[in-house]
Amino acid sequence: MFGPPGAGKGTQSHLIAEALGLPRLATGEMFRDHLQKNTELGELARMFLQRGELVPDEVTIAMVQENLARESYTAGALFDGFPRTLSQVEALDRLAEALLASIQVASIVVPDDLLVDRLSGRTTCRAEGHTFHQKFNPPQQAGVCDFDGSELYQRADDRAETVRNRIRVYHHQTAPVLTHYQRQGHLVEVDGTVPIERVTEALLEGLKGVRNDA
Ligand code: AMP
Image (cartoon, rainbow, N blue to C red; front, side, top):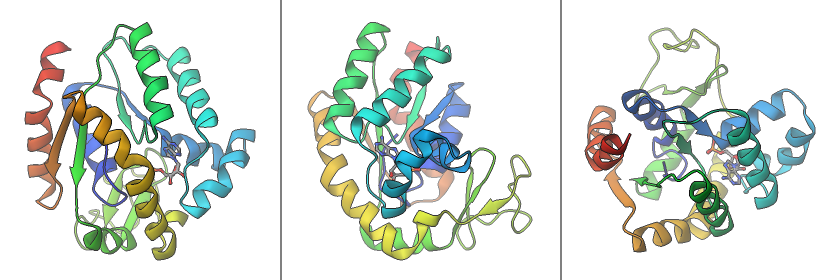
């Protein structure tokens, strides 16, 4: 699942993973989890997350490989936020080949001028990374996640300055990944400016092939 920060990637990846019965593998959440637990990997990633930059490929790829080796994903997995560079694409291709798995890519498209607004009012749940927005998608009870009751907080990298850098990074480093998958005919693009339910419908429609394969 692809999309610039604020496109609704996290919201949709939860909904789509549930609809398709797939486990979610969200690299940003994994890094935030390591940060919170003060692990060695968290320390390594801290500066990059704070600046809105990408964590180096070898660190990110090792973390994903380690997760894939530890958990069993026999029905597949939904990756949220990975791969974000062409080196990560190569690593995922190798993993998919070894697992005899195919890759389908969905991208949520939202113009840049809407993204900063969406992120500045966003809150994220501590337990599982569910996201809400004070105006566009408020929780039933302020400060509490509708899904698991955990606390909602504002991510440090959702501040306006860092958000702008994350959007820049997305266009420079992640756009080539989309071009790569488009050339392979594996890319589904959906309009992320319509209501949440309609984005989900469009994604499910676009990813039909995935459901049939599962
Ligand atoms: P996200 O939760 O997907 O918005 O990611 C938050 C932050 O985690 C990013 O701004 C990066 O610093 C880091 N990150 C997440 N996924 C990756 C990735 N695939 N490669 C490098 N850095 C990543």
